Image (tube, rainbow, N blue to C red; front, side):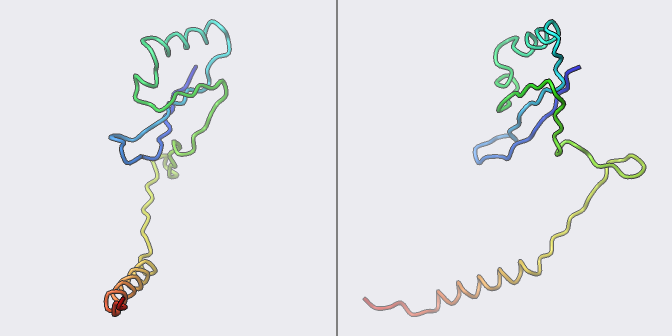
Length: 112
């Protein structure tokens, strides 16, 4: 049986919602079943346009999209990961840039 997956794409400046590609895999190779799926996908015009997708990709093989995999803990519940940034180096970089900018502002302007 065919399987549907969503592959989210990076957002552009003009995107009102996150762009995506619809990935359909495990499409049957038997001609009558394939024709039925193709008929359903193409009914009422372009499927990508109807869904708002950037594209629709169809494969006979199984396509694994790593971003769609949800890690689970030993009990089978979705694993939540909390990432905390190390801002010490960032703070130092900001301070250096501030001092540099202040130095540019306090330098005398050469006369023409």
